[in-house]
Image (tube, rainbow, N blue to C red; front, side):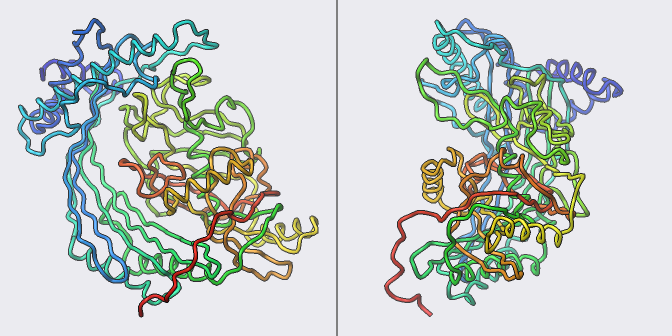
Length: 592
């Protein structure tokens, strides 16, 4: 079996690395197979699975990915620690495609549906015993094949008698690659981090207006594996560390207000020092305390300045969730499938930004201005090497972020399969997104122009937004209410992130913080009308999990993303008060 895998890998090396001798690649693969029981078991069972045709349908493509991960997490509130958690797990994700590349079992609402008895646990054992590992993989591939066989028939039945306006294949070819890193892990001082989290959470004690608060730290590290029957083999180190802060309070009228922030690092040992972490915590506490004392905002339609990281957050949400395009899944005629499509679908070659603005997505860049970028990676979840993409040139949409599922207007994958998805597919996401403006103005000039526009419109003040709730630190109920209000007000089915720090800026330069405002709509169409951009870039890092507004705590798989953008001036955006039933404040004051 090892010899069979070597044949796949050598063919891959000849295609992907023509200057690398086959013998050198073979030696590298052989060394990895001999030293890594997980990799060896995966290769052996994938070699068996690729020959399956027991139910009458042959496997034309197979893949398997797995993570050998361990994590440590600790959380605290008001100087008190909750029990630290440690975990070690090995999730495994097999996928078999039956039929042929022009029509297979993926892309259907039934692609992930298995109606039989599930014997596999979806996990590999932690002990490095090859027989036990192969047993778990055997059961996983057995279910994958039965699922694929059933899905192919149901998909064909759903399309029977239906006229399709355009027929696209179901799978794109890709050049095989071999990426083998030596597994390594860094030592985490768990006692030191536990004490640090305790001390950071105690900072909220100095802010009596804050009624609930918490600080969480988590580090996850391990090895990610990917193999497919085309010859791709990837074994890469996967590490992330992050600290999250959240605080909430209740205004005198009952309105619930919250803010949060996070600090991340792809290398946990490069997390910022305690002084910077304290600044992050204190900024969240001060924001919430200031919001409690701020007056509620009213309806507004006029010029808006997204200042600093708010502009980068807006690009991360709007373009981060729309640049990746997948097709709607196949379902029976008349059956409604609640899937949010991309606003950029079908807009290739059209203007989506001002003509003086470009958009670059570059997963190969590791730093910007001396600061690490969170979106760096070597290979995506489809085993495809990512390349730098000029997504928008002079305002015109040139390309989209694609997986190996063919989409209209594209001619191949772009290495952006970053999250596991539904329907036998992966989810495309941005990596390091750079907003580049050829025409810029100073921050002072932007502010002056903002006030001039407000004066021309006869407005007493203009609006400056300095922070958005993205990724959202709200609850699932908050998200539902936001989506419901967006639908009622005509903002569409995709809610815009809530502005956290909204300021009225009067003609004399005076600023007033207001609370309880929401953007009626913030989508790609609003970005076509950006009026001006600042001359200073701001970097914003975040973790995407595929959930709406990347709501924190949702999903079980995260990827790092970075956005670098200048401040942005919009000629007109609409804001309105958040409408919700307000709960009554507590009857008695909090304990002292």
